[in-house]
Length: 242
Image 1 (cartoon, rainbow, N blue to C red):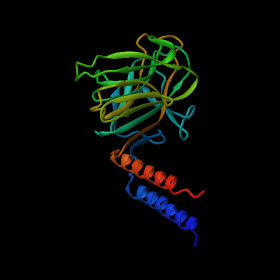
Image 2 (cartoon, one colour):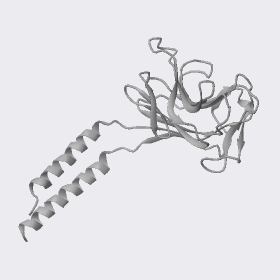
Image 3 (cartoon, rainbow, N blue to C red):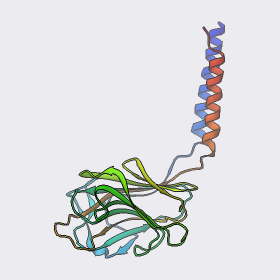
Image 4 (cartoon, rainbow, N blue to C red):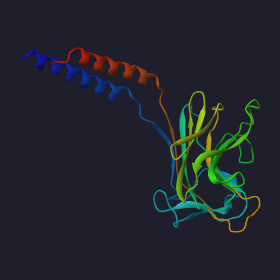
């Protein structure tokens, strides 16, 4: 057996060892909630919940979504528990019309409280771009804030995502970060709402689908594995056969 074959065998062993180590120790995301409105709702509460109904006219996942054809403010929430690191996903449908507010939401309180984060449309703020709201009623040092993102409105389905880490909560539209807040505790509820305070003529329905919540394991193993992979790469570079 040549030196080249020996070195190749050693490198292959280290690669396989690293792969098995990662498989054994990396924990997958824990799915906490999935909701595609294919069956009757359980555990949901809110404001004017009777205004919401299922529809087959639009669907992001499956065959149904949930819709509100009413012109007045209403919303729904579901408790999912407290997690240190968690992602909340919610899809909303944009008609690119004059709907006042069609918003995905995470919250620590009731819909009528100010302890919430919102992503979606707020046409009194911007008719051309997606908007967001960050608020924390229980921490007065963090001001309530409406903002306009750089993401232009387009017709169709869009993903709102809230990523809670150990230090912040980040807000995303279609994978692009639009805001963050240092308020990261709580957010133990996910939901959606329609606000149309002016009952505007030509109001389009608010439509939501494909809600998903999943927690993340500790990131401590990542640095260890990255360092190990780097050692493998360094080993290979030092023992390259020319």
